[in-house]
Length: 186
Image (cartoon, rainbow, N blue to C red; front, side, top):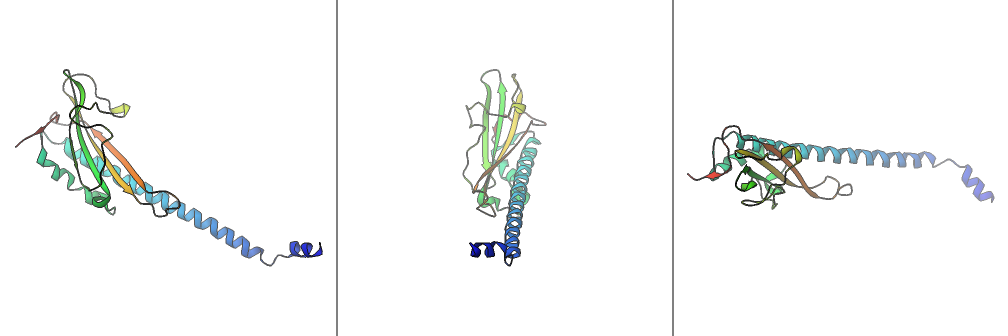
């Protein structure tokens, strides 16, 4: 019993133990902050890509299939410093509503990167678009909507905090000049 009492009265290593615990907590908080910042920054870059591409497409009066190389051209620049070409892809879809067959995905183009992904909105020519509630197409001929979906294979800084996964971002706009409900041929 006297050995136990002597051990409990000693304070020689208390500072070292407290310092080790404090260092572990500070390291964990720092790693969490770095990971969260990296993740949020990546999401912001992807949202910027979606908005840039859909904004560029909706400015056109009519679309041609070979125009899309031009629309996807700024993607690596907007994505910088992300390695988007290797780990991402953009899917642009055109949807319209007409009296004959209702709302449908009319066309789709994929580019900007090499990741394999499938549109969450639907596939042309017959899928009914799955859209957020705010962007539902209203019934009636002459209504259309363009979307840009961005998929990116995210690699976390610290794998112990988060597993690698695909981040998704999207943007929607109505065409400004033309209907853009089909891709024309030159």
